[in-house]
Structure formats: C-alpha cells, structure tokens
Length: 321
Length: 281
Image (tube, rainbow over all chains, first blue to last red; front, side, top):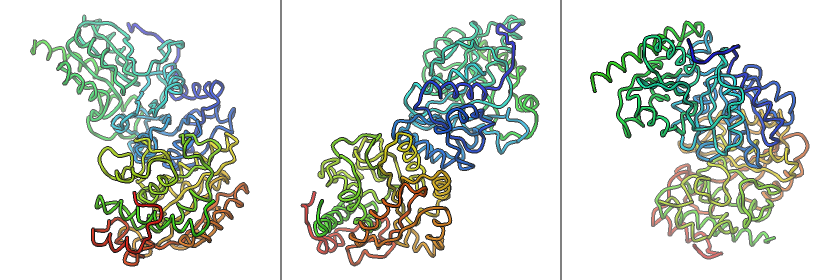
C-alpha cells in the first residue's frame, strides 16, 4: 500500500491560481500578466479581485515577458502566466536578455507542461523547458507535484528576489502533500526512507514514484523516494546523502531525458559520487495526441517503467559491487 | 540649462568620444551613435529629469530612458559619463575585458544609467511599457522614454508592444525611432522595406510626431511638444530623421559605418572634423 494517501485529485494549475489570489491579498507589489489563457492558468480570481494589477496582454508572449521585466523597475513582482511551451521556447531570447541577464525579479509561471497536456499534441507538449530554463544563469527552476505544493511554491517564490521558472500542469492528480507544508526553495523533500535505491522524482512523477515504491516494497525492495521540486538550485547535499546510503539511483520526470532533472543529478554524481543511474524520461522525441494516461504509458513514464528502472539499476549495482 | 551653442559643443565632443572609443578597440557601432548624438545630448542635458548621483534601479519620480537598439552604446556611454553617471575616464574601458562598458549595455556590471540589457533587438519597447505601467501604479507622473532603430521595426515584438500600448492607453511613454534608412546589409528600403512608417504607427493607435534629429533646436522643440501630448490616452512616437555617421563627411549616410570602427588614418581624419570642446577622455 502507498505510504501516502489522498482524498481528492486536483490540478496543479489550480494550486497556482489559489496561491496567486492569496498573494494578491497579501502583497500589494504582486502583479500578474496573462497571454489570453486566464481561465487555463486559473488566474481569474486574481484578475477579478485586482483588476488594476492584472494585465491581459493578448496572444503576445514576447511582449508579456518584456513588460514583466519592465514592471520590476518601480518595485513590482510580476507573475506571468501561459502554457509552458509559450513561457519558454517561444520567448527564450526575451527571457534571456530582458529577464535573466538583466536580473529581473520576474516569476514565469507555466502550466500544461509535458505530455499530460494530452490531446492538443506535440505542438503544445513541451518536454524541453526545464533544460532551456536551467541553462540560464541565475534562473531558479521549480516543478511542483500536486495542488498543495504548487500553491505553497507560488507563495514562496514571491518572497525571494530573482527570476523563477515555476512549472506545473493540466491534469487532476492526487493531492498528497500536507496543505500546511512550507515550500523551501532548493530543499529536496524525502518522502520515504529506504536503503536499496533512491528515486529522485519531480512534478507529476512524484506520485508515480510513491506508487512504484509501494509495489517494490511488496517485492522486498527498500526504496527512498525524494521529491526534487527545485531542479535549480539542486539540493546537492540531500542527493549525495541519500545516494551514499543506497548506492544506486533512478530519476523520474515528465521531460526529455536531455536537459532534465535527471541530467542535473547525473552531472552532480559524475563529479562527486559516480553511481549507477537509470532515467525515466521521454527518450529524445516529441509527444503526440492522446489521453494523459495513454501518453504516459506509451512514452515510458508510468509506474511499471519506474519499477523496471529500479530493478535494472539495482542489478547493475550488484554487478558493479 | 546649457544654451544651444553649448549643446552643439557637447555634441562635437561626444562624436569625438564615439570615433575614439570604437577605433581604440577596432569594433563597435559608430554610425548610428553619431546620428543620434543630438538626441542623447538633448535628452540628458535638456529634456529628462533625473539625478545622476542618486541613480537607482527603480527611478521613482525620475524620467527613465531605455535604449532598445543597444548597439549604439558608444553615444549613450559618452553622454552618461559627461553627465556624471560615471567617470569620463571609464570610456577607455569600452569593450575591453572586465569593463562595465560592455559592447551592448547591461545591468550585469551595475553601470549607473542602465536599467535593462539590450542588444538583441525589439525588446526595449515592451520593457519600457512595463515600467510605464509601474509608474502609473505608483502614481508617479514622470515619463518613460525609449529609442529604437528603424531597422529594429522589422522585429515582430515591436508591433506586439505597439498594439498593447495603444490598447492599454500607456500615455506616459515617449518613444523615438532613429530613421536613418540604413541597416547592416544596406538601405532599409532594400533589406526589408518598412513601408509608410508614420501610417503604421498612426494605425496602431499612437500619437506620431516627426522631426529632424540632427537639428538640436528642432529636436528639443519636438521632445517638449511630445511631453504635451502625454496623458491623453495615447502613447507618443517621434519619427526622428537622422544621418548615419553625422559629423564626419566620409562616414555620413553609408551603412558601412553601422558596425565598422574607423582605422587609425580614418580616425585622425574624423577628429580633424570634430572640435575638442570638453577635453578628450
């Protein structure tokens, strides 16, 4: 049985919307911008309550990023909202020059990341965004796992100074993190303690990792599941502490294997603690139309894929030991 | 306030700085810088309200300027230095290692006067609109100014920003386009014709003025007129006709000088045409 339980499923983007609305009440410096996706990003509540601090920019994401950068001059904390694809790839140079290089305090909030966007297909299913954003010097990159964590992260990023990429998604997923859990940027969260293997998971794959842990426990495998909600800066201390104990690693993320969280962890381990590692990620390909569940199965991001990766990496560890 | 003859003397020194700065490192963009010299001198000596000693990022109650076509950094750096934002001697470091005077302006090195990086074209108008919105939220009645190249009008983001500013009535912004008709590859008419630029901006909902950017009296009058056009529900645009390379006969009106620095011989010929008025750095 899964060590964690849930009573309801909710979409992570709604966590963002509730968090943003709360920020609107708490912090008069928070402003929000949206590129014609107010409903999809759940920004309606903020827009309704604070019309003077909400800017509808239309279908013009490049302009939105520039305006957000400009709003910081004068002391505001802009939150931009659109799909992950239009929050990153479409506006990479605007983010690079006007936000990251210029060190502007802009919070880039991105929904519908990854395959679970579903039926709209590959044009909208960005699987490269974590890589794009983590390569920008000074950019904090966060990928949250459920409604509560997304809400908490939304509140937390307003408190830090500097550009942030906050990535979340479209589908309803189990709400299993505590509603009152404070979000600590850059601090990994250990969800289960184990000794045979560590699964580092981010975003929607965190719940699947917990399900995999349950299945593996029944087979007698002791699994440590750690939620890497912050991909940059990476919690190197927590990762190394766990890997010293378990001596093998599986990463799990809804992203291309190139440029994702797994790659960041692999780079850390290559330098500090070379360790057998397997990657549950999309294997350098675009997605396609389908239901989120069907897509996660087809592209190898489901619970059995994590179980298989764990069994493989433990076998490798045994050979190498 | 300096008199018109005094402003013209400052222009001559700024042009000397531009050719010397670019020649010293055999790189940089003298042509557009020389074309826009009167603009920068007018803005920083006559038009804008600011305190160079108290430069800070937020610029509350101060007029804020954004250079969107960042490659004409030499003219901006020269005017900022002479206006007291940083020591004039620092112009020696332009484009050299460990300098605050990067090839294209940046906030990364904390150079007073600069509030956003520019160089990749088409981004400055959006940023300026954001700052203009912040001024409105702060009930700060000062202005936001931008400068753009006419070649930059080929960037799509400019027109996203143009549409937004009109739709949202961002009427505390005064933008200027340096219309010199030239870009790296040649005449704008040949590279990608801009068509009727005035008609475009009018149809996008802007209040459009025109002036001769190399006639400092005409330019100052137009900038002051532009201030009177603010607060009326429309963003304000000045189409400023200039001559690339203005002030040195062999550099005038040729796209070669967009991004080519004068060599030693060309430099001495250029300097012979530009009076040293404030002392070379």
